[in-house]
Length: 261
Image (cartoon, rainbow, N blue to C red; front, side, top):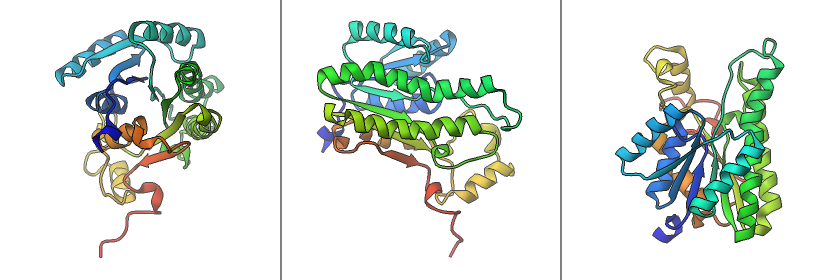
């Protein structure tokens, strides 16, 4: 069974893995044997991330580039392939969100969110998909969201992009299945990260809402994503294609946390 989940000999590229959930998923892949490559766009954050990985004994190669620029992506992926060989696992994790009511949102801001959250996964997948086709297969994992299924106040652009990413996942899976490329997604629920720390305090209305809305009765820990990411990156998922696994403590399965019996 260990061989099903062993990523030894594989190279994994995780975009936006200098912090947060992207870093947690990247660490899981590395600890399962993958050679790890991460992408970011801020030099200071990249250097801090490398130190963080090193503290856990993880060797990582970091590349700074804009995932929304097709020419830059092509150039940087070629450099990675020349230095490290082909990429076997691509995790499209880079993303942004802008919490602005739809009536007030600038069109340029809407387009920027869609560009990062939806167009960049297409650009990355298309470029690396060509290599995967040539080498006989690969794994692409798109980081979707519960907003791929549900709406919420003030995240119109994000929800539109993540809903589109779910369908991009299904369509690429359909087109590329014959090349032995599996394209799947992960939809994280609400997780305990540095970004959510201010709203996870006792008594905060949103904290109470999440605890009462989630059947598991808690926020997710970043490590809760490890199983899903390794599964979708490994041989264990060779016949899984076009699916989104929601790691959300049961939120999407119910209209609310059940009453205590």
